[in-house]
Image (cartoon, rainbow, N blue to C red):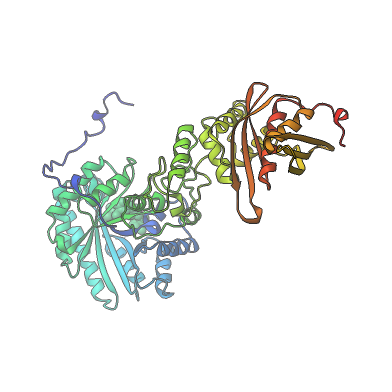
Length: 559
Ligand SMILES: CC(=O)SCCNC(=O)CCNC(=O)[C@H](O)C(C)(C)COP(=O)(O)OP(=O)(O)OC[C@H]1O[C@@H](n2cnc3c(N)ncnc32)[C@H](O)[C@@H]1OP(=O)(O)O
Ligand SMILES: CC(C)C(=O)C(=O)O
Ligand SMILES: [Mg+2]
């Protein structure tokens, strides 16, 4: 790399718009959206879409709610020509949707374009030619007058072709290609000449589309350029001002948003940002940015994964796992402090609250995603994430000190295995750690003795062994602890007790969490059972068996 890049790359330009208004603007409504997936997106694919894929994507775009869809460059290839014919001949374009087709400013291409459009109901014919200095010099070999003449002659040709097909409702669009690399005064000159040729009026507006064909400046400079055009173009009230950002600097979304603030009415882009090189503007990104600021985007992404699958199938390109709003990992927190905040915010959330969720800019449910992937546990995670998964997947509401205790057990596993632990892994570890599978307690009888004390009789089943337990005390847990002495002679003191139901109705079970001091060591026991009392006894038994074993069975054979 160069020590002085300015020797090779020109220093960033400034527009000098000292009274710019866009920084204070707020986007209050959705722009007119135009999908260019089937043209700009398609022309950038390793293998352009076959007709079946094109049609599938077209139908998806319609379902999402696009009213303007650029369906191809019909003069470029037989495939694009045939696709346009198919849409028209099979009447596949809904009444509220307008198809758009692109053509270069070249006579034979315009003729072929109109040939493809015979019988169409509504069409935007999109004309472009390059206007940037490098393109004038190197590609077209024309001076400024020559480029204006090229644009106007072909704009006229389009108007005349359209007049010969009066049954179609025509609209015209012009793009000064490489607008972002062009002197503003020259862009204005070409555009004014084209809108004059098309006689643009508020009643018959045309679309002027300003492309950052190659994104080459910071978004604020692009915004200045758009605002300058917005304020200086002739016949502005007869123009729908559109922008077509690409993403070469990775700021396509920002450029589009500031362009809307600067006066643009319409955005062209592709789903998930497919398109030439680094892609076109990602329409989903901008639409959902609006949504998360309370503006209805007028596009429906309520099953975003189905849309992504279709787009991946049609483009034969994957969507990155970190892609905004849609990637596999974008609603997932691995790190402990994020998980802790998310868990607490979910617990504090009430129906009707505004969305104010740390680390989650949108409710995944709104896009048809679940909360399942919101928290995933690895070595960066803490108690919050672990207990969130046990609660959301298994209904366990662990008390805080148990969360701390269990997270240490999880961390020990993490330290040796270093892999992600799923909710099922955590559950298996929890069952093992707290002895939830064995032993069982059966035939529990709780009664009151003549002296007012409570008596508990139960059977403890461990593998093939059955052990009788009998004890008395001030309450059932006290009596159970007393009975346990004969099986496992340890000092047990109950420090704290939590309990809740898991599930509801006939299937409901109780979870009991007891914090005990056993021979001076503080430990938790966990019990789950259909019966509340049995759940508590299981919790005591589980905690005792975490510290000691039963005395041999022979000494206390079942009565
Ligand atoms: C920024 C964009 O996305 S613009 C859209 C770009 N999309 C595409 O190019 C995809 C479809 N394109 C194609 O299939 C072909 O390029 C075609 C059919 C349009 C033209 O094919 P060809 O006639 O073989 O020309 P080729 O592709 O080599 O294009 C270069 C010619 O077009 C001319 N040209 C390039 N841009 C323009 C323009 N905007 N207006 C007029 N002429 C142009 C060039 O000067 C060159 O002319 P020359 O042959 O006299 O030197
Ligand atoms: C045809 C034009 C609008 C284009 O795709 C671009 O300049 O990027
Ligand atoms: Mg483009």
